[in-house]
Image (cartoon, rainbow, N blue to C red):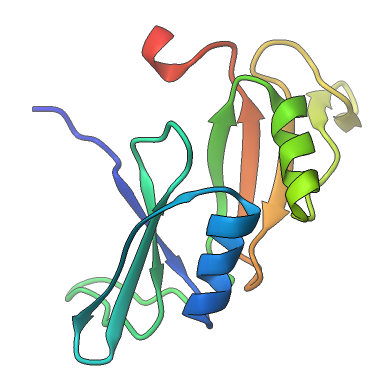
Length: 143
C-alpha cells in the first residue's frame, strides 16, 4: 500500500486574503472553494506540478484526537523546484516577499547556491505561515 501526502492544512485568519495570496501571488491553482458545512468554508489550492495541495482552514473544527493550529504556526514545510533562481524571480515578479537564495556552508547559512540539494529560499503567507523552497536536481518523477 502506498502512502501519499496529498493535503497540507494551512491555518489562516482571513480566507479571502489567503486565497488571493496563494492563487494570485504564488500562482497556485484553486481546486476547491466550498462551504463544507454551514459556516465552514474550505479552500484548496495546488502548486504547479504538485500532487499535494494546501487546504486553507479557518473555523474548521479539529478532527477528534488532533490539536488545532493557530494561524501563523505552520513552519518549515518545503516545496521543491528544479530552478530556484527562476522560482525566486517569478515570486518577486508577482509581489511575494521572498528571501535571498542561501545554502548551508562551513559557517552555517551562506549567500548563494551550494551544491546539489543545497539551495534554499523562504517566504511567508500574510498570517506568518513560513515555507522553505529547495532546489532539487530533477523532477520528482525522474528521481
